[in-house]
Image (cartoon, rainbow, N blue to C red; front, side, top):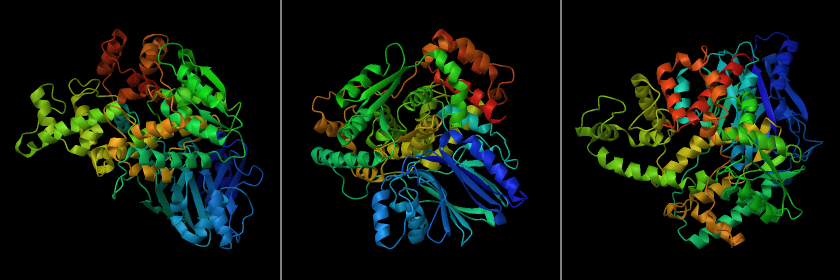
Length: 626
């Protein structure tokens, strides 16, 4: 596990200047790899790249860059290739020679054989750059699900990239122009879908994508998608018993390869089913006992009791950290800095704190991300969305014959009928994902009419870009969450918070063979009667017949409303409503003030909007001045 960064700039001048700039980039991401560093440079072409290493596999021999036998292909790599042993054995049988026992080295030899198609043979999480010196070309890749991030910027003959956006900020030729229009998207959906970031010109490589470029013409870089989650086109698994049996084998295999490490591995436990599944399978493969970790807070709804029960069943050495509102106030600046781009999910703070705790005991953690998106875990949300779509489909049949509503969010029932009849199916799916502003379509809050119209147009734009119809509506919603929520919110939070504490976080559910199996399982085996992840529950019953499966879905929740009305009220108000607040140039101060007052009086319950604004202000202050 590492962090990578670099640039192409023929105007940098002498190599000492280029090396100095690269050194500054790498210092910005030292937390991602405190165990060492490495540099790959071609000064003749103005190419400078490097990495920071967190040593996990082949502690002594896995330093980067790693090159092939004749030195013509080199790689800088962030992540883990879990099937590296099997790949290495096949490559050796075909005559390739290995100098190390690291997973990184398989990449250069796979590239020799398959070029850019090497990604099709990988099981893992990764963001890497391969330098083909013979062709003076670079190949960038991001893993199938987007577990590892990669940002880039290009203009003319210049190009810059990094595992973290902040590393690009040290380069004098990369502009820091904040995209104020992105704020509206962020406050509506609490994250931005790739390739967009909060800075003009800086993009993030989408999950499952490649970027190929010539050192002489980086602005002509070619992007292509090599993988997307797709529901199966052939026969589906309809029998619960057969599906659970196949899933049990796939989970066992995935957890087994995710445990490959030369350093201690632990499990990140919440009170829910996903982390219990990961922990149960890991404990079976690790009979010597494991360490488990959880974060919680005082009061109802905390994770402690459920996590303790799982830890006891696993026989693990269990560690807990109790978090408070005062902890969040003291840590919000560090959270904003490490996130790199704001994500309006306060659970990021809990992940940060529990990873800090875990770093005292292990270097690697397993977690349960990805299960909900593969197996329909957000049962109430998915069933509500499906019901809404069915009702709107009936209205859309009359859309061509009806006038457009006069307002983007009509207050009356008839107007809302017209709006739904005129809204495309894809745009409605995007609208149903809104978590912040404008909120309830019957009573939108915090935005002006012009901004509400802009949100409406963004729904159509994002629907056209992100919604890919699958063989059934549930899988269409799952694919949308795999496209946006997973890589650009949940996995971004998981990566940045864990790497901010120099911890590697692995997600066994996000394994290509397992995802391919999930795509073949009938939707009724995933979501039925208000219960999600049905097949996972049956699978777990094979391992633990006493499991009641009655644990509510949480995922390190924070009592954000109570804290914003109580111990954090003054701090958040002072930070958000300061005279020079960044949002004031975009949002209507009167509407936002009214919303704050309603939150305090209990008439408005979406405190996450103000957590998101607070985080944005802290982030804006740090990132635009770093």
